Each structure stands twice: as structure tokens, then as C-alpha cells.
Image (tube, rainbow, N blue to C red; front, top):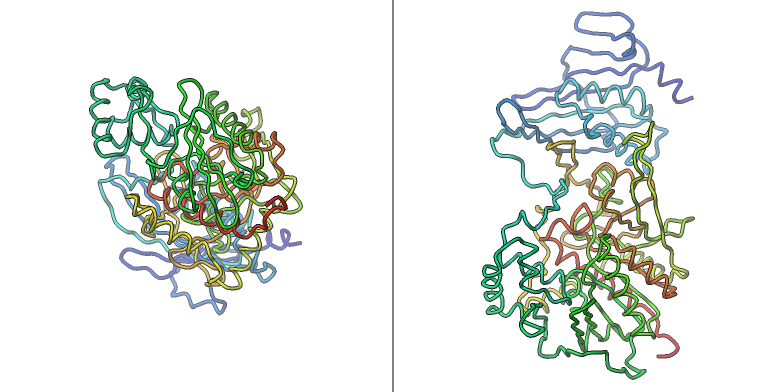
Length: 578
């Protein structure tokens, strides 16, 4: 019925107010009333039947219905002849038919926006842009009543747009000049595995002498130390004098056996979790063959906890073996563990029109199912393109995991609900503040970056991008300045999908994904294989990819995830054995 009535409508474009650097255009759905060409009115026919261009510029009166939803984005376009970069703002203001409920409006607007800016189909000129809006309203979105478009020039520059993080920025180490900062990142990433001078020189294609000189600087600064007869280097950790280097883990009395295991993979994630623990005791087992291990034991609330750091994650053969075997060794060493929590950074899935569902940098996503499904974590790959298949209908190969029991998810949901009723109940805000203070005394900065560094971009294909304004709404969605919002939903991984903006959005929409991370499926498989019935993934949002792109948000995002994890653990009952 709706589609039949919409076919009888006309989509009418009318110019509105115009200034030296801005233009407003109204695109409105009207009953089929204008049938003949008039002066300054063009009625299209053929394939464009139903499209009307009203060239009479009128000072449009305000619609008696206030705008129901708006979306603003900035476009960076490059003139191929002059290499001049133009930045312009484009704002869309939406009005819907009465039949569209308030909760459905953001969904319709988001889908409309994603079709409008689809990569390689985005119109580079004003005429094409307005034409696409009109055709989408006519053919695909009969529930849209009116769209007001405001185009505003923001300036030109010979300089390229700022680094957006949209492109897949994985470059080989050979393309990065070796510096002490780069070597420290490599050592922290490999920790607790030591790295030899020759290995670092090989990976960076640098002279051994240059690498040794830079390592000497780091050693003099107290950031790294030598192990294995001065042939390899590892990170100097917090409370280094209390770290015990062992050949094998000493026997731990029953009263001190941890019942909760926390798994991290980045150095900043391990620091963040350690900052949540009391009465810490750290053991490191260095090996020259295989994986070294680090275990930090301590208390969170009334619970005994052990935290480890994986030396690497991902889908290389080495990473799969290392992460899986490290997890298996952890659970084999501490057999009283009943609960496993993966804590660290991830990449958020933004919602461009619904502030209540929008995941921003610094927020926390907690792996939870969307009923009636029970999956909390999904690994995905893109099937090879087959005949008749296009990027518009990609096919995914997936594997998903769901814990046998959802105790940790239920606690997380209860904590979130409490804070929605009373924001002062967000105990993790206090834990974040305490963590920042504790870590700053150790000379590391885990403070929240400035809000203006949280930029949201979409790729248009090639080097063109648009910067999308974060959706805003009433304060009822629980977002407070400078504090994380907790989101409950499935988390996914899969490099092939997460690195592509359009695939990531498509996969997230199909499966309800709220965040992507750096491929922990081997870890989850090990947890599952070791028959741990209750596990949770907690991701602090550091970027809009998979958590690995924006280094400046990683420390705070790690701390936010660790702080919420502490809130969950402190809400757990003690086991009968305790």
C-alpha cells in the first residue's frame, strides 16, 4: 500500500535561502499535482518520471513540524587539476511520515545516509548529490516526507585533509624509520617475550649498531633491560623490584588460588588491569624457545585474580599458536579459575543518526547476546567474490561463540541498568580516576584525550573521505562529558572485514555488532576447549576500526575497560570454596 501510494507522489526540489557561501535546498514529497512544464518548473519524464525541479527560489516557511532528525558531515574533495582540497559541510534535516515511529526514524535515516555516501557511488558535484537524494526518496524511502539540505563552503587548502585513520595503515616495519620510540613499541608488543638485537635489526632492516645505540638510550632511561645473557631486551615493568623471575610457577596455596583469569594482549592493557588490583605479586618465566609467560596475581574486591599478557594475537600461524597455547597454559597452571575475562581495546561501530546507539571513543562495549541469539563473539571472513556477487551483497563465513552460562553478562546488564537510573552508581568512573592517579605516579599517562580528537570519518573510496558529526540527543541516553558510556552487544573480529569501512558497517548491521577487536578467536577457542563456562570480553573503544589504529586513545580506553571489569568482579558473589 505504502509503495503504491508513493509511486503517485512527486519529489519536488525547491531552492531555499542562499548566502555567499551557503545554499539551502528543499526536497519534498508531494501528491502528483504538477503535470505540465511551467516557467522555471521542470517536470521530468521517462526514467525520471515523478521528479520535479522548481527553479523558483522561495523563502521557505518553517515547517509546522519541527525537524525530526538531522545529520551533518564534512566532505574533503580534491581538484585533480589544481590539487586544491575543498572542505564543505553538508547537513541533512529529515521529516518523516506519521507512520514512522520515533524509534524507527534513526534506522531509516542511517540506511538512507549509507546509501547516499556509498563508496565509489558518491556524487562529486552538487547536481549529482541532489539528484541522488531525490531518486533515493522516490525509489527506496517512501516513508521520508521531506529533506532539507544545507551546503556550506568551509574553505580551500593546498594541504591534504588530516590523517583520518580510515585507510588501512598497516605498513611493513621496513617502511618506518627506526627510532627509540619504535623499538620500545616493539618490545612492549612482544612482552613478556624478549627481543634480540638481531631480531629488531632484521624487522626494521636497520644496522645492528644503530639498534644497539637506541636500545642503550632506552636502557639508560630505565625503560628496558637485558635478559638471556645480555643478548635480548624486555620491558622494565611497574614495581620491577617485586617481579619474580622463575623457571616454573611455584605452588600456590589453596586460599590464594585465583578464581578469575584476565587476559590482555597490549602492554597498556596489562598496566590498566594491574592498576585495578591490590596486593600484587608478579611472576615472569623467560624462555629462549617458545613463549615466555607473565602472571600477576592479586585481589580485586574479595576475589583472587590472575592477569596475563599475550605476546601476540592475530591470524599468522605464529600468532595462532602463541595466543592459543598461552591461554591453555594459563588455565592449566591455575586450575581453580572459573571465570575468564578478556580486557583491552577495540574499535567501535558508530551509529550516525541515533545518539542512544552511537559508540564513541572512550566508551566500553561488553560482549553480550542479542536475544533470541546467544552469540557474544564472532569471527568473520569474506567469501571470495563469485559470479553474480557484488560488494553490495557480500557473503561472510563466520564462527561464533556463546558461553554456557551468562552470569558475567547478567551482572554487566544489571550495572548498566543501575547507572541509567542513577548516574552516581557508575563506580567505574571512580576506578578510572584512581587508576589515572596511580599510573601517573609510575610516569605513564592514561588520561582521557581531548574530545576534539574524537573524529568520525567515512571513506568515499580512493583518497576522498567525509567527516561525520557525532549524533546528539537528549541527556537521557546517559552520556556525560568526559565519561564512558557502557554498551552491551556482540563483538566481532576479522581483519578482512574490519579494515574495510563499508564491509564493517554491513557486517555490523547484519549481526548487531557494536565493536571489532584484533582477532582473539584462538583465545576464545582455547577458553571454550578448557571448558570454562563463563567468560566475557570487555573492550574500551580506541578507534573506529579494531582498536589498533589510534594510539592516543589506547591507554584511556584500556583503563575504562579495566575499570568496568573491576566493577563486574566486585559485584560477583564469592564461590563456595572461598
